[in-house]
Length: 118
Image 1 (cartoon, rainbow, N blue to C red):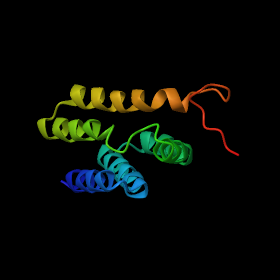
Image 2 (image 1 turned 60 degrees about the vertical axis):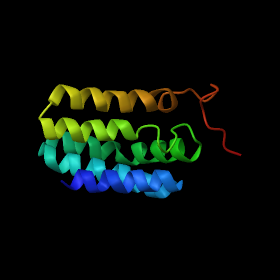
Image 3 (image 1 turned 120 degrees about the vertical axis):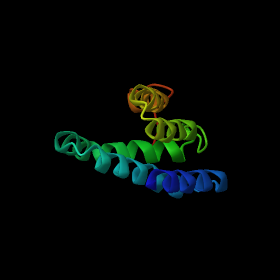
């Protein structure tokens, strides 16, 4: 399964402190999932959101808001649920991942969660 290979790449990059490697693996994982879904409406919607998702994910990783190892269990759970054909469990794992990023992604410019650029 390609997702296992990408997940292992993600874990290796996280253990090495390689932000770019983790970032690349996250979006490789997402691309495989999107291909597998075979849903053109979902694909279009997510591709439209991709640039924003990429920016938020990168900033989250480089500012330490999402520790490199922090959300790896969500990816492992998704793989395990796919192998077990557990749709609900996979959905819960994706929701957990989104919840981990939500406070940062929705933060207002004045909040303590926001990133201040010089």
